[in-house]
Structures are given as structure tokens and as C-alpha cells.
Image (cartoon, rainbow over all chains, first blue to last red; front, side, top):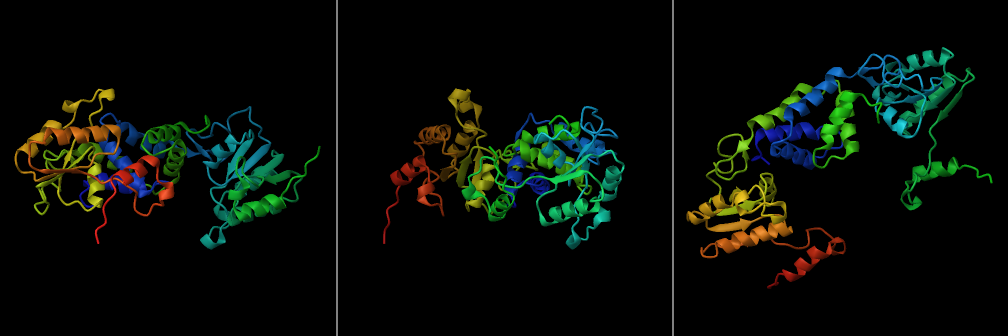
Length: 200
Length: 200
């Protein structure tokens, strides 16, 4: 595509590095930005810079925040004794959609020996400090259901077996609305293993 | 999602206005930009601004260009007598992928009476000037196969019937590699109407 003007080519290349953007969509967006007389390029560039400049890590949950403490941590109406452990800051807003109204702790990773990431490389010490402070009544571990996520979940659960608090992880099974025909074998196996008794 | 920090929320909103980006992808990208310590925010913002500042309209074909004349128009190895008419600047690079090696003319729209766009609102006068100059031997009209695109194609063809030049439009039919089972009815109708004789 050598005839494409260089600034458009360059923007498309920058865009195609972003997650979820294929090269075709990247070109479509780059041309759209060239097209739109009304697109506020300053505003758009500024929005990117604002994210880089103003977003910091919340001192309590290690999620993203504009202030020293994020809006969830500083919200007194939230249940502080129920603590949900997630891998990445964005996972907080996924769990929020699920209706969780406790507080969070972001690990910023999971234990992944093959990638050289050990327990001390993620925010596990901070988690154990919180839990051992006596202010946590329940720990909901909401890591991704990967090998590393599962191993990290087990590591956390085992590390605090001496404490008398409830430790749980997200349920696994067939997604709502899915036809079981289209569900992958691993999910199906788990859905069967973790089948729920029906009492009526 | 009111707990999402405002700069991330704002960037996601800006991103979701771009074509082909759903709100979920927009949030994923906004969080990714917050995540990546190594992402060159200045470079990214700059790439957007460069597109807005440096891209102009080629004085010959009305496509996008960094210079007064684009690289296709200023390339002497291209066939100047074969002229391809497209709707938008980005369509040039679609037709390039099809192996066309002539030159282009961008209309910047199609005739669309319902949207109040008449023949004088797009670059038709400039097209007719070019064709009537005697320097064009063949006109390939490559507009989108919509009602407006087809009407504009017929309008152009009828306007120059007095000239003895070949006027064609893109062939229509079943896409390569497609199973005819999955082809929509309109395409199928056209593929049958415009069936090609086989001579062997």
C-alpha cells in the first residue's frame, strides 16, 4: 500500500498496535480521521495525553484513579469487609457489572513462572497485609480462569487457610443464553463437575 | 460505569465515535493506553495531528496527498488515459489492491437527492472537464453498488455518451471463495443477470 500518504500510514500503524484493532480497521479509522473536517484532533490527542498524565494507581486497591484514592475505595457505602481480588485495573469494572458492591484489590498480574513472574512481583504481600489486618470478612478471588489464574487463586487460598474467613472464586459453567452445543469442552467439563443441586 | 476514572471514560467516548469501534473495544483501548507504561502517548497524539495538519487534497485527482499532487498522479509510469472514478479518497487504495494501474478521480460523494446532494455538490464538473479534454481513453466507474452509487454511475455514463470512449463499471457477482449458499439474494440475482459466457 505504498501510495497511501505517510501520515495516514503512520497513524494506521500506531492504531494497529492497540488491542482488538486489526490492520483494516486501523486504516479505516486513520482515513476517517483524515476525512472528518469536524473531528476535534486536538481534543482527541488531548484525551490520550490526559489518560497518560492524570491516571494514577489508587493507594488502597491499586486500581486506576484520578485522585490518591479511587472513587470505590473512598465510597463509604461500599462493603469494605468483602474484598474482591482481580488481575488488572479494568477487571474492576467488569465485576461491577456483575453487581458486586464490596471493595477491590488489584494484583497487577498473576503468578506465571514461565514468564518469570513470582509471588513477589505482584501485589500479593499487600493483599495478605489487608487480609491479616482483620478488616476483611470475605475474599472473592476473580482471576481469569487460565492455568496461571487458577494457580494464583490456589496460592492465595492456601496462604490464608489459618484465617477464619470465607474465600471463594467465581462460579464456572455455561454462559447465560448460550446454546450448550456451542460451549467449548473445557467449559462443559467444568459445568458438569461444578453442577449445582436443585432443591425444590 | 460511573466508577471509571473520567480521563479513561472520556477517551473511550472519543474512541467509540470512530468507525468500526464498538463501546467495548473503545474501553479496552482506553484502558490499554492507561496500562502501557511504554506507549508513546506523545507519538500517538502527534500521529493524529500530523494527519489533520499535513494531509491535503491532490489538485489532480482530489485524493489525499502530502504534496500538492499525490504520488499516483505524479507517477509517470501510470496509465493517464485510463481513469477510475471513486467516491472517497480511501477507495483509491481499495482499487489499487485490485491491480488497477491507471489514474483516479475522487468525487467526494455520490448524487443523493434524499440527502440534498446534487450533481454540483460533488466533483462531477471537474470529472467532465478531464474527460472532455481528450486525454482520457477509458473511464472505469468504481462507485459502491448502492442505489445512489448506481444512479451516479448512470448519470456519468449518460452525460458523456457523445464521446467515443469506453465507459465501464466494476463487475458484480459472487465473491471469490464464497459458497453460493451464503451469498445474499441481490448479489445472486446480479450474478445471474450478468452471467459470463464461457468460450472454449
